[in-house]
Image 1 (cartoon, one colour):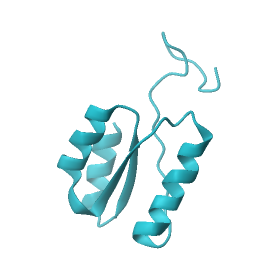
Image 2: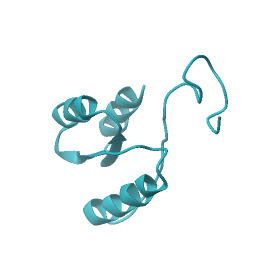
Image 3: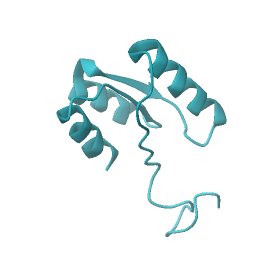
Length: 85
């Protein structure tokens, strides 16, 4: 879902910072999304991740115009539930 959204945003002219937890997924995203995207490997449940993503965006692109957050479909290891759980 996140990669599809990133492709759509690139198609609309966006420059992106994307964050992924899995090293393999991050490598595929870098290869797929190209030079208008900076990929960070980090865990979105770590508060430092958001700070790193914002800092990276400002460093590479100067400012942030939008935020799209996709962090899985469930807050529990099995089944749907609130993310805070």
